[in-house]
Length: 570
Image (cartoon, rainbow, N blue to C red):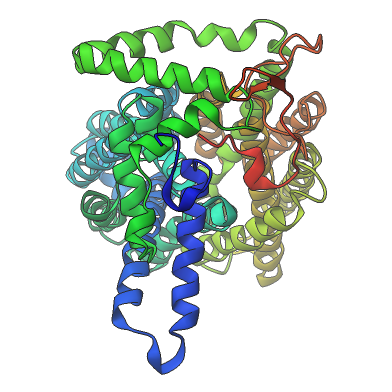
């Protein structure tokens, strides 16, 4: 009959199908293990894993672009070419205005794209948004190496910020939506860890190019900086498909099935008679049980499919983009402001404290430590690795909210001791600080980096889980945009302190901002071991989610604490 599916099994969701395909591919590899392992199966898995390699490289390119500013601001040649008044020898180097403007420009771009890229990815496509961001940053990164003055570089860095927001939006959603549920955490963690690799990549090149004294070619450094983005753009173009979930949400069932089957084949799925079909997916959308609002979501998807077939797609897309942008205010309605506003202030505080990172290399230089500043920056960047490992291991045990508080608190303590150490170094009046000071400053800077890594990973998880499915991307985008405003503004304050060589005051201010972060983090709502919401529950029980069986009987979906089951199986 029309209700049957391959092997008389129940209709499968995309999650179900991808999970079974991944397990099938694994079983084939285990069966052919040892000498019998054939090149065919290696090739199939390689085609799937290279998708995540491309996404990881895109993430690395993003962090490299964000991290490069710290090093060029500390380059003597860059200061002469861009920051010095009139570009004349002996002119004053302007960190307070020119340096701060360059340091904050990409935050301004990310502020704009933070609000737009989520909507663009939901309406235009995850892959298309990612490719647009990578293309933008490839062009802008190359042109930045040829900038002639601070104005040109500021404009280019602002445009780079626009691209950064689009890349982040595409990478996060794609890595989640093309992963099999049973391995989603692993694949997302691997892609996220590449963010740290980007910082390590650029800090290592800073040591090589600037040679400790900062006299190297900063234009060469900027070109090397864009290489991960160029490679990522090529790999995404060749190997990364659009998300099948995106096509499904757009009502394009045929494309959703085609991409799902493509991913399955790349995983090593060889059962050609058991591939996903459009008919099976349609049956699942209408009749599936236990996923909350399945029938209504299924009918809505079918209706969208009919609209897309009968209406110009471009007109429908632009209308939806406009509708999504004008509905941003809904994250403050029906009591949702109690979640949104504390998260906004938490993002603002964390970005204000993290703003110090833009100036670490210059801070090391101004403290006149025995070890060169670029080598210290490389070691300091390495501290992000244990920070990410600690956050990944503790986030489900300690809880998201508690780890955000720990991140703020630990960062505040580290900055307070750094401020005291900087004051002691300046009070000695020596041209070169004692060797012990290098160890102390580096150690405290590493602790700062560890705690900030914990804070960032935790708040990203907290914000993603705090909003219902219908406004999840929008809610997170509003919070991130609030942080970008703070990140843009604070660079002018930090630039002033760098210009006046008031390192101790700068670090003390950052420590105080972290204390404020502890206070606002205590006002957030913890989401540890709480199921994701499809609709906002304002505490009155009015938005309970129900499922409907084939006969129209209401059923409450079963609860589950597993990560895979918390994700909505569309």
